Image (cartoon, rainbow, N blue to C red; front, side, top):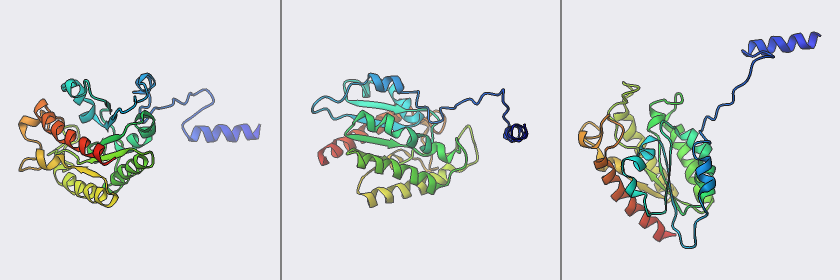
Length: 231
């Protein structure tokens, strides 16, 4: 009886009780592409599959310009709002298990926005580095993309991403150089004099219009072709 009382007190302290239910949370959103991954056939012989790993900028790409993904072996695995720790947790399921030859990693802006809590630039860097190392260990060529310009975050104003993003991109570029992997510098091609996105490329300072994706498509296609030639 004494042991049961102690257990009840401990559960109460933790905010639980014998009648409460612990609701499991799919924090990395592994369910998002679970069925799509299961239905995706293995790459055919000679297929140069490419997985795009990212957040809403990647996810919305296939909605705003689906033609880019049509008739190409490109697999979009973006999830809106995600941060790098979430992507790292789903990297095996949503990238490695799909057996691509190349993965395009575009991540970090939501970390700077604090979507899943405080993150230092070093922590974001290390999560992307871990994705790069996982890719290389599994014979996948990683393309590390710069974070796109953002003057401010409409959902969390005042965090100065126009200052933090250029600093973080310099860290990504140095990491890519040290690892001998490709760095794709969207930022330099898309920034304005505020270190933000020009009005024609965005509607909210963060997400990209069709004109913005046109720039990105040309750049990433060239990077993918170059990566495939190096394999």
